Image (tube, rainbow, N blue to C red; front, side, top):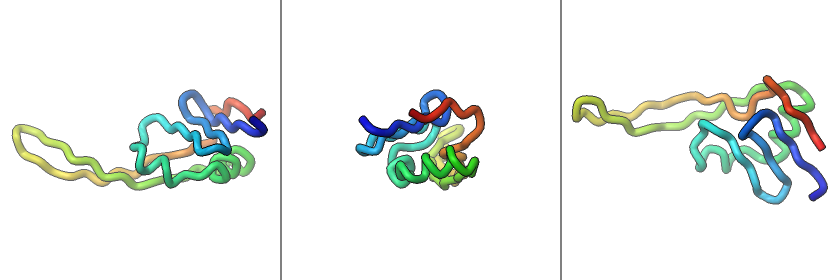
Length: 80
């Protein structure tokens, strides 16, 4: 392992396609690259991604489009 970027707890990336982002759907976290994590850490840029959810309330089904912050430089843990 040559590089490891950890922005905060449960939000880290390795250059060999290992990326974790808590609270973001897996298909959305696949669009975030290792370079995005490094850019977020070095330049303190907050990136957002849109995701859609299907929910139901009282037997009524509807879709919600949410904008999630992923990755974010707040509470930065470090880089090795």
